[in-house]
Image (tube, rainbow, N blue to C red; front, side, top):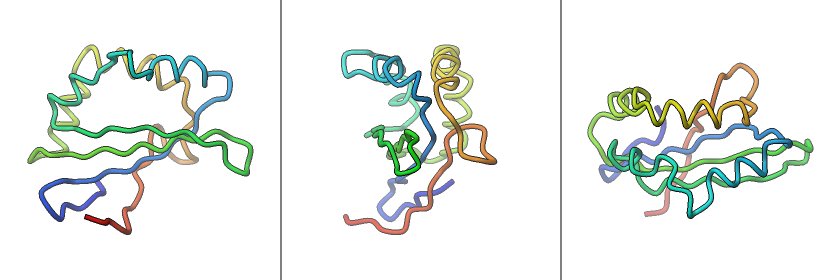
Length: 117
């Protein structure tokens, strides 16, 4: 998975489409006062998780997500996070609101090409 560590932190960027009809509900789920699964992310060594949304010239909405992984085994932590019942319920609510890129079934991890420490 992307985001090679230069300082013990793996920086991950991802992209996915967002369905127009789901935008308002998606924004409500991710509002600052909505706890969501923030505690689960922290438990599995994920911090500074941010999601941005933008309508691109193709007329579609896209989300860009960024997070930092500070653990020692990203794949194991992602698997453990994926097994958390509350995270599974969260994804069951959020995934139908998204539109994966062609050939993907969820978020697409982006290649990091630059980092300014």
